[in-house]
Length: 176
Image (cartoon, rainbow, N blue to C red; front, side):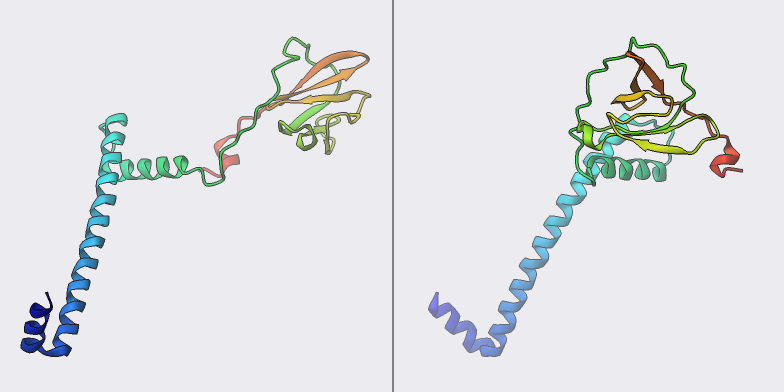
């Protein structure tokens, strides 16, 4: 091995040997980058093949790439994974309340300290935020908060106040 290096050094000189080693390292680096790039492209092509088999064949390539990108974003869980386990749906048999209350929004949480209901005393009244155990207008007490409703206690009886969902028109959405 030493004799081979001596022959190469005699032929190209020490400076030439340095260039030869640098070229060899550069070639190995280029090969590693190319291998890594092909590996990424193979993974992408496999995902695209899977996506094509599950999506409609009538979609254009631009639509398919947009769908693929949306699937990647959704599967990357940018904000983490929710491990929220809500309470059992108790109170589903409770009747709807007759109180003049409007539930305009909820923030449901497995931790009752973080759950909030936004309730207004009628259609034109300003809404206020209430936590579990707080008194609502009309003398009711907020007992539980769910994704689509709240459970209140009014005069010793459990009642539901359901979140009313308004369907927006194209004009309200800003679509002409």
